[in-house]
Length: 38
Image 1 (tube, rainbow, N blue to C red):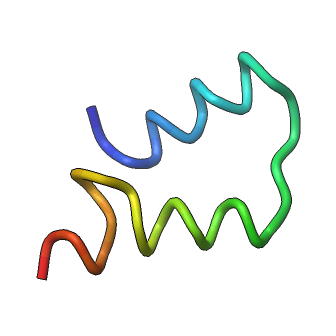
Image 2 (image 1 turned 120 degrees about the horizontal axis):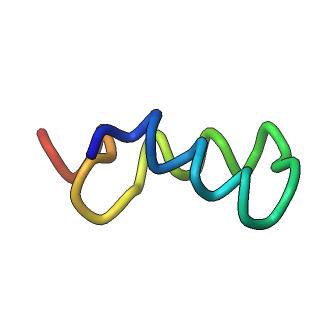
């Protein structure tokens, strides 16, 4: 599953997320985040 798909599923489950939550997921997601893949 891509990060976009995971975010879409999370938003579908819990409702809107903040920009800060979005950026945190993009940067630090345990398997798909920018810093964990570098």
